[in-house]
Image 1 (cartoon, protein in one colour):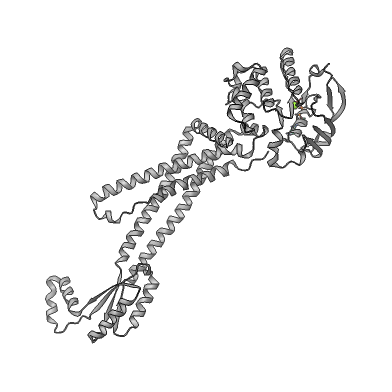
Image 2 (cartoon, rainbow over the protein chains, first blue to last red):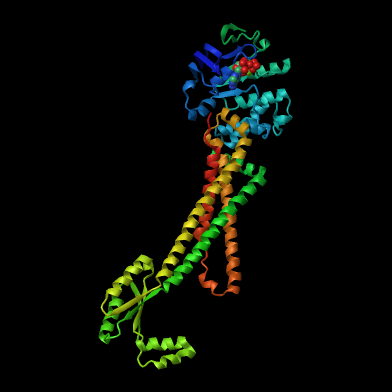
Length: 220
Length: 294
Ligand SMILES: Nc1ncnc2c1ncn2[C@@H]1O[C@H](COP(=O)(O)OP(=O)(O)OP(=O)(O)O)[C@@H](O)[C@H]1O
Ligand SMILES: [Mg+2]
C-alpha cells in the first residue's frame, strides 16, 4: 500500500532522509518512531505529496507520488486521511462543519454528510459538542476531531502524526483504540510517534528512524 | 453541481462576514460603471444632436445667369435622379430677391436702386445622410461644379469637417475612458478578493491537504467577485436611470427643446452595464485567486 524505494529528501542542501526503503502492506497498522527532528513528519509529507522526494520512488495506493501532476494531487489525498501534528482545524467552523468539510470535498450529498458525520461524532463520543468551535475544546477533544475528520471519508490509508502528542495515558489509549477500529475496517494505518509506550506490546511492526535512515525494524 | 452550491453558500457567508469591505468594493465598482455609462450617454446624445443638425445639411448650386428654362429643368431632373440627393429645391431669381428683401427688412430699399436682378437662380440640394463625410461631400460638389450651366457650388465645408472631428474625438475618448474604467474595475475587485484570499490562506492550505480540487477552492472567491460585479452593475444601472429621468424631467421644464434631443440609454445599455461589471469583477477575482499549487 505504501512503498518507499531508495528515497532521499534534502532541505536546503541538508539531507533529512537518506536512502529510505520500506513497505507497508495493505490492511497493516504500523508505527514509525524516532527522536524529535528525525524526519517523521517529513516522511509522512512525502506520502501525501506535500513534499517531493529528491531521489527514489514512492508508491501509495498505486500512485507514483513523486511524479504526480499538480491536478492529480487532490485525488491522491482523497485516498489518504491525515491526522496532522498541528491539527489544522478551522477555527471559524464548528466541530460538525470541520468534519463535514472532508466529505464536502468528496462531493457527498448533504443528507448523507449529516448522517455520516453524526455517526463519527458518536464514535469519538463528541456528539454533544457538534456546534462548538474547536478553540473551545480541550487538546484531547481537538485531537479526536482531527482523527474523525481524517477517517470520516473512509480513506484507503490513514496517516497519524504524533496523535497523542501531549495527552494523558487514558486518553491516549482511547485514541489508539480508535485507530485499531479504523484499521479493523480495512484502512491501512501508519502512526508516527516518539512515544514508545504507544506501540510497546502491541505486536505491530515498528520502523525506527534514526540518523536519516531506517535504523531497524522490529515488532512492538 | 454540489461544489457549485457549496461555493455559492461560502461566497454568501463571506459577503455577509465582510460586508463593509464588500459594500465599499461594490460602490467603487458602481461609481466606475456610472462614470463610464454617463459619459457614453452624453456622447450618444451629442452625436445624435450632431447627426440631427447634419441631416438638414445641404449644398447650394448657383446657376449661370443666362440659362434657359429648359436647361434649368434638365439639371433639376438630373439631380432628382441622383440617388445621393434626397431633396431638390429650385429657387428662382425672383424668389432669391424676395428672400433677400425679407432678410434686409428696413434696408430693403437699397435693392430698388438696382435696375437688374443681380441674383442667380439656384438649387438647394440635400444629401443622403450616410454621405455626410467631408471627403465625400467635397467630391460630390466637384462633380456638380463640372456640370454645364453650374456657376458655383457652396456648402459648409469647414463646419462639416469640424462636426465630424468633434464626433470622432468624443467617440475616441469614450473608448479610452471606457477601457481605463474597465481596467480600474478589474483592479478594484482584484484587490478585495486578494485580501480575502490572504486572510483565508491557512484555511486554503488545509483544504488542499484534505484533497480539495482547484475548482472547489476557487469557486467561492470567483462567485464573490461575480456578486460584487453584478451588484455594482445593478446599482449603477439604477443610478443612470435615475439621473436620466431627473434630467429629462427637469431639463424639459427649463429648456423644452431638450425633449427632442435627449436620447434615452436603450435597455441594452443597462444590460451591458451589468454584464460589464460582472465580467470585469470576475476577471479581477480570477487574477486574484491566481494559480493554485499543491
Ligand atoms: N520546510 C522545511 N524546511 C527546512 N527544514 C525543515 C523543514 N521541515 C522540516 N525541516 C527540518 O527537517 C528535520 C526533520 O523535521 P520533521 O518535522 O520531519 O521531524 P519530526 O521527526 O517530525 O520531529 P518531531 O518529532 O519533533 O515532530 C528537522 O531538522 C527540521 O528542522
Ligand atoms: Mg513531526
